[in-house]
Image (cartoon, rainbow, N blue to C red; front, side, top):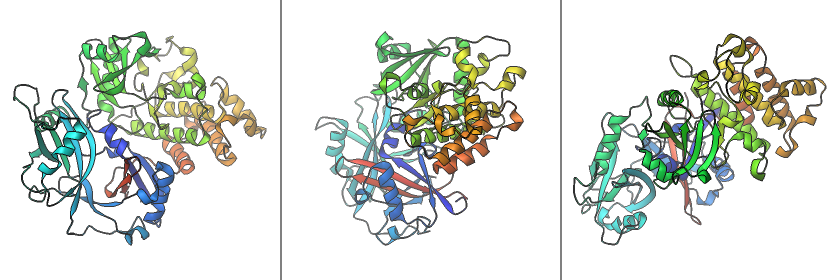
Length: 526
């Protein structure tokens, strides 16, 4: 809780599908640092919050099913029981506690492990009868995995992963109750291996133990790809798969394990090593592009794929794409600020992006933005040097860095200020500061606001213009720090960053018509 408001986070079914098995995330259900966040008054009732979700997620209230989440001894937070109609009329802050109920059905989460592809992915949810047996759901699991009717299957319960992995086989002939399955438990299933020597990690248990050895809480698990795998993913780096060519490298669109990815061939070995070093230490964040893996053979890096390209192209409406609405533009400013706060909070030394430009901000299918190409600018932006694309980079570069060569978090604040002014006006970056300042002084700011963004609330636009102008002050001492920037932006968007605190509710939302589902996690910040 901050003041009279409460932080809420929302994890949808698509978050689970996109996160589990991607970027080294295999355990549990969702990475809470990478899901959407809301902020509501503490006296908001559950039913009012459901109406807010209906607007944001497109899932009608009548299809939403809310569950209370209980903390477990293994450190996870899983659904314990559904909220009743009386509780939905209470505040989201209501400190109701789980009750032991005689339940007929249990909600379980399913993951599928493919030993041939060495791949673990999320399948979905299933309600099972307490008195039924895992044997009874085998036909359903075979159907979900596309197996033949007589395929032999093994089932495991994913129990915990810290300090050591515990993943125990289920006895398919005993009931779920005897197997000690509870609401919110994770069941992993796979084909029964014909030979223990047939695959490197023949069981999901061995695979999870392998992953656990390669990663820890402070670093990302990075896959190592063979060059032949990247060739196959890009049809031997065919020109049609090429989507960009910058000073950082040539980028291709590819498909690995039925997942679309971006593959970047670094321009040099030094760039490759620098980027890998930065990404290993960077951690995961909802507004930073997920690093999937690398190929040391050819100095290539593999990232998640964001289908709407970069912000520069969206501002220019490249390929006849529609202009961004003012609401999306404000949200992008908020998300970029949130990602920078994360980078700048690194200890003992803050991570500075150093090359914050619209071309290094990528846009996902839902118009959520993510930072890219951070932490490598020192290889290009040396005082007195003449890096490639200097003309496009110069308008976003901190003037003090150009004179004294010192890159600090306030250098990113300057770049963010230029981006704010560009999103507000749609104008090119060159001399944009002077034009906005003059318009502001002559009370003609309304003439510069980009009309294609829709009816931008003038009060909000004026606040953003003021904020942008403060960020682009020539001297750093006159610029606001990023925390102050965040305070202004967050008040405009009213959607806070993901907090790092306990979850109290989790809500599966089932859309009967098209089988969409979402999970709502309510957090409290103390």
